Amino acid sequence: MQRWMKFAAIILAIVLCFNLAGCSSEAEKGHISEEKKMVSKVEESEEKNKDEKKTEATSPAKDSPVSEAPAKTEATENKETTSVPDNTTVQSKPAAQTAKQPAPATAPTKQQPTTQQPATTTPTPTQKPAAKPAAPEMAVTVSIVGPSDRGTILGATKVTFKEGATVLDVLVQLTGKRNIQLDYSGSGATAYVAGIDNIYEFDYGAKSGWIGKLNGTSLGKSAGTVKVKDGDSIQWLYTEK
Image (cartoon, rainbow, N blue to C red):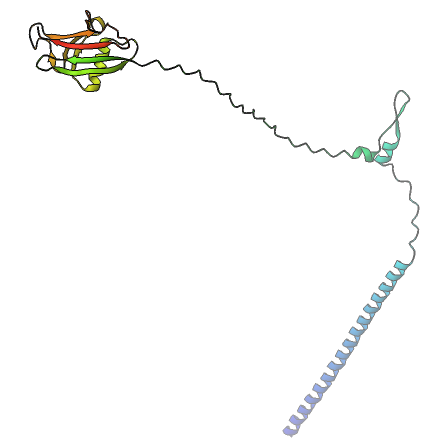
């Protein structure tokens, strides 16, 4: 008995399940049909909207009502003439002309002033003064003779000199070139020759010493004061007295 009751319960459960499944399927079918209806309605409304837009685009625009005259603008006010005290009318410029201002002219580029360099002038060569002709060469002949045991120290030798030279000047010049020893003191009127070639006064007696002659004549005064001339002959002699 219990087995039959369990079997019947099972059968009832199965039948209920089938019923429920059928109900759910019908509900789903109804839901689907409702969605399809909604979609079709939306599509119909969209088609209507499209048709209305097409008809609006093709239909001529309705005449808009005539609006009142627009308010006077600044441009029209500017066109009107303004009265002046002397009953003369001055026509103002249109606003378009007054509004437009000429574009600022571009400032011209400053050109740097070109400094003109002064023309280089080549200085004219100054003519050098003509060279003075060389003075003729002047010369004298000089000889040196020592004591008897020494004999001639320097034979007659030509010596050039400058104008204004003295007998002493010529002796100093000659002994310097020939490396002959010379010992003298003073200058001008006080000049005195003490020794030549290491032979001094008083070496050969109380009155021994050097004397000078010009053209065979004793000088008679200091050799530093007697000037020579071209072609003169000078002798220096050692005396033993």
